[in-house]
Length: 596
Picture 1 (cartoon, rainbow, N blue to C red):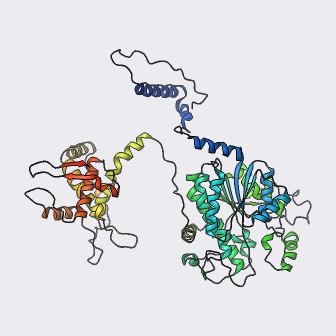
Picture 2 (picture 1 turned 180 degrees about the horizontal axis):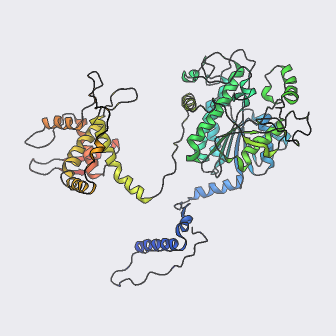
Picture 3 (picture 1 turned 120 degrees about the vertical axis):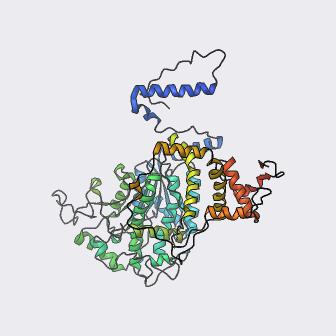
């Protein structure tokens, strides 16, 4: 693909001697060089911008063509959205807004399919753009099945939005309720199952143009506010002792202490907000995915409070609406969650979204007109432009605890995360240098580990495997012996002439002499020189061949020499050792190496 701003004139290559015809490969190579030269001359550095998105052409099979056609028929140009828990409350209102925009194909992930079908009929959902799928967040097996069913349904369409909305709130429980997997229900439904789902879906999301993962947080998980820091119990994962212990029945809390239903909910929201920040740090650059959390306001009249007592459900909305001003209707909250999924401004990753609502909405009609907006996650009002990036508490921003949360949750859910690989420059020079230096670096590291003791994280000495010991022997024989006395000697002389001697000032300046190893310190494994001496002691002088008693060691050594001499240092597969064969003749004949 050539950028339209670049104009090229193509002409045949002429002037070739008749006795030396130009091959097709030579013509192609010369044409590429000529094209790039003209582009550089015409526009300088900007002339190469058209190559920024260059990709090798892909061969599409007939089956893939059919799959692409079905994908276009099913989704058209709409973005694909998955939202959990959308048969009531916030999720239901969000789906209404998504479908009303006519820009999204929405998948409702719910545990009660019959209820969702009834809601879709009552609300008049366009079923061409709405699909219902079964998901029970109380079960990790159900999460796995949902993700597999989703991949089958989406065909060749990447997932554009994942909205982790489903949640339960069980503050009145005297004891914990347990999931299918034996974990406390609130934490598994609100956090752990969403955590597992994200791990399975984000690798496919990176193909979307503007992928977003949105987690519905809560002011109760952010203790730098009155709602989160002034009402007991306070969200606090402490040292994650419950998670580190496996979080299995009877361990009901992430911190490992006694169960409180309201704290389990707050801890789960704190976990979601922390994980949004951590996943942003880990996968935003490598996968291009936006990770964010939101607090849409206090939805005081939502089924989330269905397990609260009747008097609370009656008076709590009145208190939030007329006393604190934090009340938000479920319809407006749905618009806010929709905004984070839809608004281009919300493609910012690693943030916590809130809205400046009008204080005590309903008591002061001119509140907004008189610039009476409150600063912080406020109540109703404020409109589309009142969105802002809210501050998060020290607990949410605790990076060390975020890492531990990720590690322990991965162990609990058995999640398999994709590798977070950032973009590598396609520079051909880098590839050539990498190919040349890889084997040299590996050999030098082996020597460094053998010459000095080296210690693992637990303080024990680094012990070389038999494979690494064999590599050291092969390096001694081939690289240091054969090559070192030929090409290597020339290289050393040239290096001294070009680089000169090491300055004396570079050798001085240490404030302490290097201390000898203590007698009781872990003994390092033998180095290459000791191994060579041991092997030479067993060398048969009449044959000049190395006599290796252990057949396994012999095989390793032969493999290493084979790799370094004939395979440019590339390791052969472990099960391919049978394909190598040493043919040894009489002592006066040369040693011949061939492949079977």
